[in-house]
Length: 488
Ligand code: ADP
Ligand code: MG
Image 1 (cartoon, helix red, strand yellow):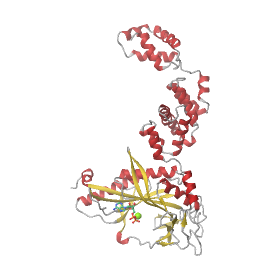
Image 2 (tube, helix red, strand yellow; image 1 turned 135 degrees about the vertical axis):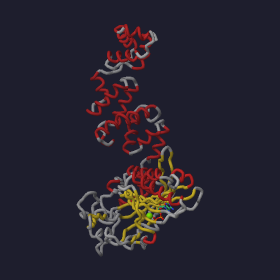
Image 3 (tube, helix red, strand yellow; image 1 turned 30 degrees about the vertical axis):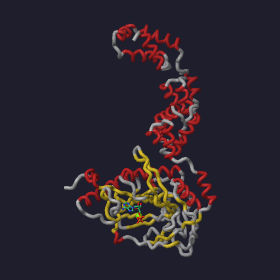
Image 4 (cartoon, helix red, strand yellow; image 1 turned 120 degrees about the horizontal axis):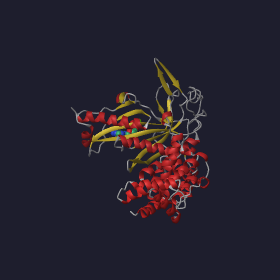
């Protein structure tokens, strides 16, 4: 009977390194003019180069380079001024050329890092390299027949390779999330995982705590969702722990994650491992990154998600709210625009109140409509104006929600709706006193009972005042004046 996973984890430390493939958002393929598109009829997006016809020559897509450079710069990588394409050779039906164009010993980027948000802390994970390559085609197997679709072949990718320094399935999943957010933020990839635009291989090993040397690893292939990374790595850690804790040894192998079965199965062992016989591609000149290209990339680099996360927290935004705000660049931009329109800007109260309204009312409404923040019918400036009207007491928070709903629906300016509906808050003390006096006079029995100690009746009077004023009574003043009037 082996020990439980938590027990084994007291002695053993998991080590994970990820290799993530990200599809670059170009309109055409990496080395040839075919269009890049998802869901087209099989083999409709090919050309002589993709088909591996003799005599064809690759021409590298400059946009792919620029997109890869953005990621390199955003991860503080060292950019190689002259990198090289290499041929990675293997025989498979999805690769008509017989080799994949990739980068080997002279990759575009090295020694960068990715800041990963894990729970409440930021973990800096070093990146070994980021290199350019082309995708292969796709094989599908239907019964005894196999089909090859080359629409994906030749699509430009970057492969992001992490150092082996993630230490749990959760960290591995968060690494994927952070990278997903970053590439979308930089607009270098849509990173739609359902379309295979972001996918990873996870390398997993375990070692005794305190040990410097890495344990023998296995590699899990075919992971294309955050949940699968988490599940596959968790499952693999447990599998290895059971072996090593029983005194066994891990075999170096590649395993295929089967999401439906919730388990992995061996795909090939070390003995069957491919020898790719990499060599520099003689058809492609060195990839040169000149100063002016770098200058353009650096100049256009937006403020990154994690610095923004820190900035929001410094401005007093709660951690969870800040995390939601940076989940998407459009969301963060919306928030910044709303803050900019607010007289208090980001500092203190303004930002916090805007975040509250944005994350509850606006996201709630968008969610109901199945809309993205980019499709918000309410402009950031309008939300900001509404927040100001609540903050300065023109309307109550409760009325504010109604005004929000109407403005969201019709596009009418909050102030116009307020005036038309005549819902300005009553904050004039003598006027409010008169209303309260009438309300109390109208319910003498309740007033007596309250005076005699029946505290629960206070709410009855608040309700009556709100009813009498169509909810326009200033709630704070109402409480004060009611207490005064009721004598307790
Ligand atoms: P390849 O998979 O092509 O052999 P590498 O040996 O460079 O390439 O490793 C690829 C990935 O495996 C990297 O993300 C690296 O961090 C990770 N890795 C290497 N050794 C281990 C190990 N012992 N445990 C966990 N991850 C590892
Ligand atoms: Mg590998």
